[in-house]
Amino acid sequence: MATILLHGLGQTAASWKQTLQHITQEDVVCLELKDLIQDQTLNYQNLYQSFEDYCQTYDEPLNLCGLSLGGILALNYALNHPTKTQSLILIGIQYKTPQKLIKLQNKIMKFLPERVFGSASFSKKEFLSLSQSMLEIDFTQDLTTITCPTLVICGEKDHWNKKAAITLNDQLVHAKLNIMPNAGHEINRDNPSELGQVMQEFLAKNNLSKR
Image 1 (tube, rainbow, N blue to C red):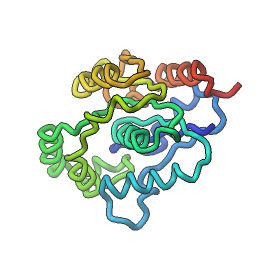
Image 2: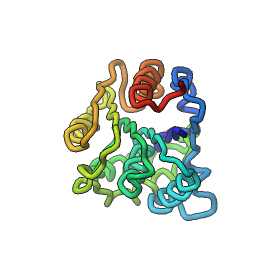
Image 3: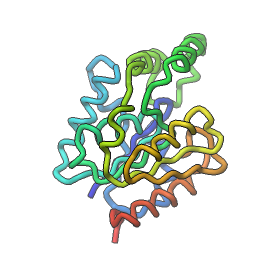
């Protein structure tokens, strides 16, 4: 049974490298989100559709783990394909786009030099385009329909997303919340060792990891 890891907007698939050292499951795929979009216009709708098409190539249900943008994609897929989602690990995500925050963020990003985005999968232009296309995302009314085991993780210093993590834990039927110490938003960079251990324990508890 495959486990798919989805990175955040300012990251790449390589951002999971240290976390992976603590996960023993054999079939783990770290997707490079930009590779999914190919020659299409980059917006959330096209990115999600490409991700959905990729997931549908698997016959068995999937374990989906995503941070930030990656977590939103995973949650979106689970809502649309509950029988194809074995489990979810949602890290530092919002289930409803905080529009004022994103608009402010984008205004600031416009003045940042391109080199700031050098280590990210997406360029500055792509970052802004993708962020803008996500303003209307709102899964609030559908959260209670997700019934698969779900691990909600938020860094203790990730103040912007902690409230959303608590709400997700309350609304998702089979959710467990983990506030990760010594970490901000990008937990796979701030505390990859503990994140990997927590993920592995979750997978093992649900009989999903390598036996």
